[in-house]
Image (cartoon, rainbow, N blue to C red; front, side, top):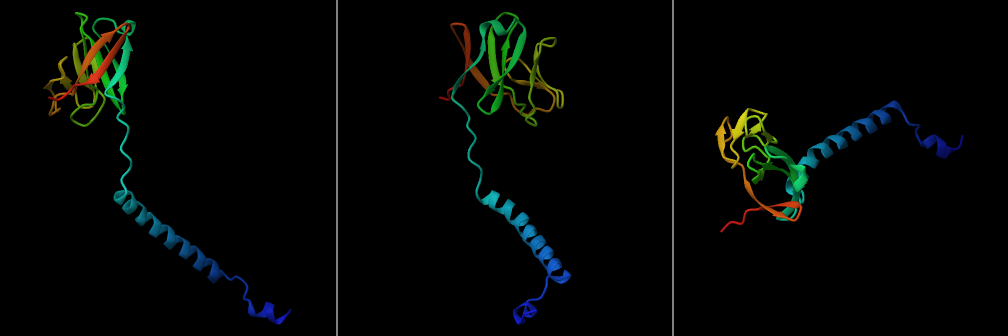
Length: 153
C-alpha cells in the first residue's frame, strides 16, 4: 500500500449513517419548504373559457330532460322543460360544490350530496343550499343550443 491509500479512510458504517441522516434532514426541509413556496407563488388562474359555448345539438334533448355540459372549468346544466323551453344554469351546488342533476320525475334540479333541491329557474327550494344557482342565457341558432353568461348591468 502506498502512503496516499493509507491516509484515505475507507467508507465506514458511520459515514453511511451520516449520509442517510443528512439526506433525511434535507428531505424534511424540502417537505416543509414546498408548501410555503406553493402558498407564496399561487397557481395560474384556471381558464374559464369564453363567455359563450355550444352546450348541445337540438336533437340531443327530449322534452323534460337535462344534460350536463362543460362551461370552462365548471359543469353547467341545460334543461329542456316539458313545454320545450330551454333553461341553463351552473351545475355546481351552492352548498358544498357537488354537481347537481335534473330529475325528470320531480321536474327539479337535485343535489345528491345532501338532498338539496332547486326549481327550474335555479332558485333553492329545499335542503341546505344557501343561494340559487347561477343562471345562464340560452339561444338556439340553427341546430345548436348556445349558452352564455348573463351580462350584468
